Image (cartoon, rainbow, N blue to C red):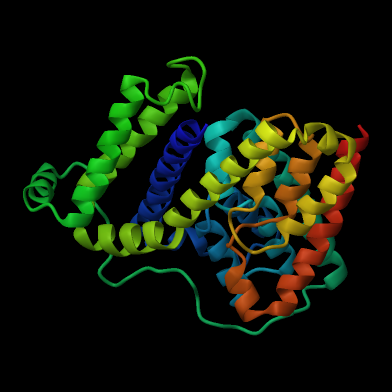
Length: 342
């Protein structure tokens, strides 16, 4: 069991690393301009923040929080993003249950937009917080990267640094394991279905980015940000959640209790979703994959929790954070109860 869980964890966290790397790459290539220009378009705010919310990870949500603090979007638009996002767990969910995650994303985007419009209608654009500095990290030395500059690629490989060497070596090992079928007995029962092919393509793209980016991007954005701030935590939470569920299912036989106490599990999922951290939600993702909880409970948990994307909001405006969480709890419980009933 441990070997299978470890393989799952390695594969999932590798997928997370590459997707986070891709989002960082896009953010730098656009110089952060993908966040500008929406403050003058009230109705556009809800759709833009919903889109930013469903972007896996913290980047989109950090951007929305920064826009809100700077009075560029309304509280309703902020709420839309917080409902639409489910943090770093989105990487895991897209890896393991992609079609369910797409369906879930569409539903919570619709719920987020409707909730944001209603809240703004009753709040009349009342400000809750003061303005502060932004949270995005765009450095003066960040420059657009030419993907097909072969001379730069050769130079990067000839003068390879320790971080680049470690990342290239790790991805090459993962790619070798995929091709050799080492992960077939963990994530997938059948070899070379479309999910495994998508894993292979994502890893190849990550390999390509690591080869072409500058040392500054590699060290500041990938090594110091993605790896140090996110990767280890996601690995440990993923391994811990999978191990915990594996032990419970193997030795405690708790499926019968869970299925007969769905309302209690729903309340726990919503309360745990309040925690502004990526990881706890993975317990309910795993329970859903194992068939222990219904889709409604997973949906409720996803509505309430937003990973660590709202941590800057908690730091800068506790009133906004707790008001948003209170609204999300109410919506999550209503949606979850409806899901259990039907």
